[in-house]
Length: 226
Image (cartoon, rainbow, N blue to C red):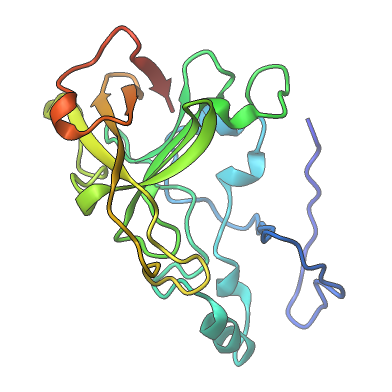
């Protein structure tokens, strides 16, 4: 376990003097107030404790700098810094982990700890788009968009029974937030899901299949938990 360090930053103090450009942005974690959701803390708090208390960094930047930063930010809806806590008790939406794969951290500190991860959440730039991110799909991690962005995973519960999602390629440009030019809506597979009791979910992926090819779970269905 890596110990957390607490540093109090007051207005006017310099937080960062040097910035190194990397291929992907590194999130800056402000451990000030709790996230909106308390669901699934058990799967993440033992390894990534900072995720339990993460807030929007834009809320702690004063004007006029805040407005200048937001003008460069492709996300145009609040919270402008995005969210990581979409879990709703008894609903499909949120982050889940395949049963017996070690939760967020994985087993035995594997480099590919994400193999057992599953997220069914709004897109981080355009939250009207439903995204399925899975740690293993045909042997590798994949991200998909849900065709038609329906049914809304925030409304799917146990009473809905088995729910079918058609998976297509992502069509959002990460830099502009707009649809990619030349995007073709081709179904790449099907995901069957069923919300269970006890913060669990039954899931099965059918690569290369369309909606008419899949009617029910097979023996290959897996259980995920929060």
